[in-house]
Length: 210
Image 1 (tube, rainbow, N blue to C red):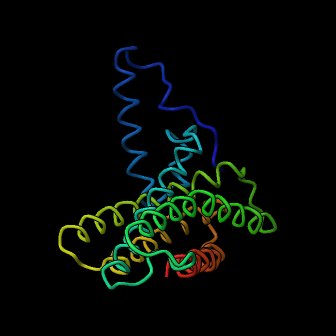
Image 2: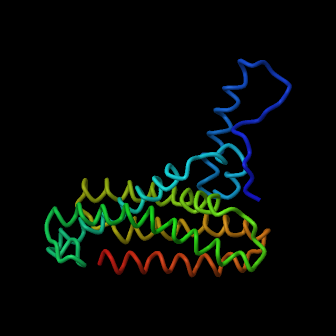
């Protein structure tokens, strides 16, 4: 399933000087693949990507998502960290930090739930590979969140729903692909489980950030 493949192809054809370029090309392709199928990407050049790096991607995505939420609340004079009744810029920064924690520890917990849920269905993927794949699945959400923050600051628009939630929903595609990879190609269990986990993710945002 998610094998521990070495970075880049190892072949007998070609000189040693050609291999670094080929390896970089494979890494670029793998980087693009994580936008649609992080599970498949982990079979190749990203198999050894450190988990903290992968969780850094999801943590940044959620941090920017929560930052947009805080900016939106600040614009309409609402508490910017509602659960702690904090207002103003301090609440915006605090909510952003909550998002970073939610996007790292929360995503790791989400992946662990998926790993547990798929064991009875025959999945044999290692827990660390599952966490890595789930975290990398938020690459599209990171792009949406970054664009949302830029739009929010530049144009003064409320963007948490238009960009932030859209990015989180977009991440369902990679999540389904990862679960399908874990479950040997079975689509319906993957869709159902991804829907439940995605709904849990958005519920957490609604509870913490609004």
